[in-house]
Amino acid sequence: QVQLVESGGGLVQPGGSLRLSCAASAFTLDYYTIGWFRQAPGKEREGVSCISSADVSTYYADSVKGRFTISGDNAKNTVYLQMNSLKPEDTAVYYCAADSSLACRLGSSWRAPRYWGQGTQVTVSS
Image 1: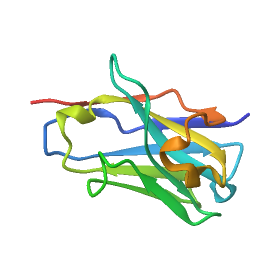
Image 2: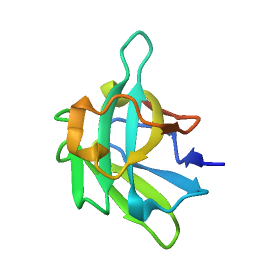
Image 3: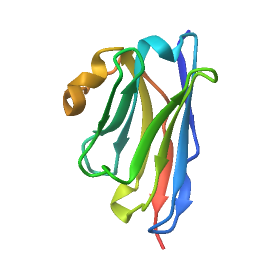
Image 4: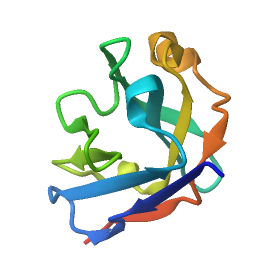
């Protein structure tokens, strides 16, 4: 059974950093797109970033470019989202998601991943 388990969320002050992890089981990252979505209260879910090893592609939403970095460790079957210079508007539940290897090419149009994690809360506040 495919599982995605997020970790690393928490409370951080503005300007701080967090690293989210997404550990995958029952499939190998080599052949999938893994991405991060977020949803703040009262707002629509938005795609934040994705990576596809097979397709050699990455995507970042404009709102996080230059601050967030996505990376994968295929040996650990884990994808990371390093988040720096965090802002209060980054506060949301962050979800890890997985789909076919070509999905990351869709960028912001990738909205319906096949698999989802349970989410981890990120709160940026002083």
